[in-house]
Image 1 (spheres, rainbow, N blue to C red):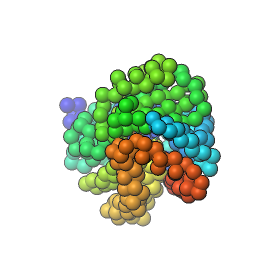
Image 2 (tube, rainbow, N blue to C red; image 1 turned 30 degrees about the vertical axis):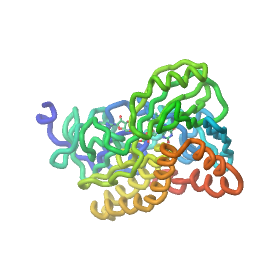
Image 3 (cartoon, rainbow, N blue to C red; image 1 turned 90 degrees about the vertical axis):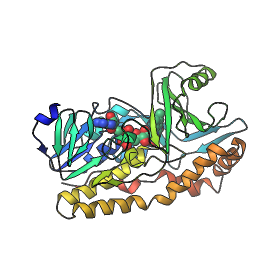
Image 4 (spheres, protein in one colour; image 1 turned 60 degrees about the horizontal axis):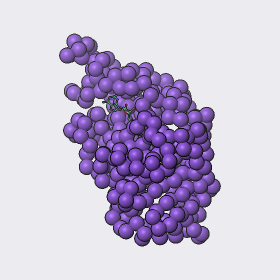
Length: 355
Ligand SMILES: Cc1cc2nc3c(=O)[nH]c(=O)nc-3n(C[C@H](O)[C@H](O)[C@H](O)COP(=O)(O)OP(=O)(O)OC[C@H]3O[C@@H](n4cnc5c(N)ncnc54)[C@H](O)[C@@H]3O)c2cc1C
């Protein structure tokens, strides 16, 4: 194989995966950093790209915003619940512009190549083997460096499939309807000139196309190109064998809401700052790994609560869940929980550490 003939190359740090988690880590790093991805940065969108508006603003990529949303509608067979999001508005953004904006803030060498694993401490790629004292796995649910069976989703993964349509709408919509999808939810995310319409299965069912086509017919619209993938719904190990894992590679996508962008960015920034302290010699690698594990462990309780919410959404009668969501949307409950949820990650995201 080609890589066997090539000499090992040394970097201070190697980051595998150049999407939300990988770019958040990389923008915190100085020194010789190698950023690897099998695709060009921003080329392959997997997500509906819905996140609080403050996220692209804090990261300096507000130009990627396509539409701002200050209301959310949850539609169930028995009732329609409206949430006022104005305390923390959401937005949908352009994936390519967002990722390219973050890449422009990174001082790294980017190499487009597929990573097949780690061997004798070296990252093995189609372009050769690369070594570095610090390695970060940001390769999403596949966990190229820290995962198990290649190509097989681990347990505790949901699956989402979506398509771009010309449907124009004002607000974000979630659909909870067992006739549409038994253990999961649908969504309509307006993106300025149209909408992304999708279905997510908490049970990890990947054959969602017939149901999604039915939903599109109900909405009177037609499919564009489809994209879909697995995403975790349970925290996984944040470090494995001396390698940091961030984002979906560490199971950091939030259960229930399937919001994975913000956790990937938040934990990526935290991890990147810790890695930089290791590179500066202020921490040993072992101490850095331990601190990162502790940062993630602080969030175990909220993840468990969301996991419980996901279980309720999947297993209790939809009309009961609809009552809970309706109560959550009213005074005095909404102002108690929505800002806390909406501002999660806020202090950690922002301009990278000064050089
Ligand atoms: C249909 C759908 C809609 C979603 N909508 C939303 C949403 O609106 N809002 C939200 O917050 N979350 C959403 N999510 C979840 C969100 O997309 C993920 O949680 C988020 O993308 C995780 O970011 P990440 O950087 O950890 O992983 P990813 O975004 O999956 O990035 C992993 C990167 O690693 C690269 N890679 C993988 N394997 C290799 C390899 N072997 N070699 C080299 N490179 C590799 C990939 O090319 C990719 O660039 C959605 C998910 C799906 C499936």
